[in-house]
Amino acid sequence: MMMSATPQTATLAEDDLPFIHMPINVTITKQPNFQVKVIIVNN
Image 1 (tube, one colour):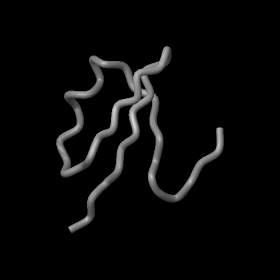
Image 2: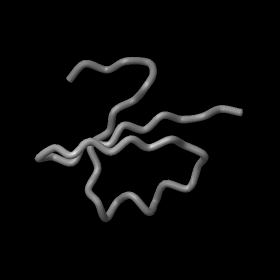
Image 3: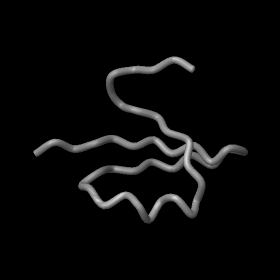
């Protein structure tokens, strides 16, 4: 897997989403492994 500085791509299960409690923009891509692109916003 190629890792880039930003944005970071993480593979999560749907049930794991509630643990995210920071200001982020989440782009969900409908794929077999449920990929979630998480872009952290630093303000």
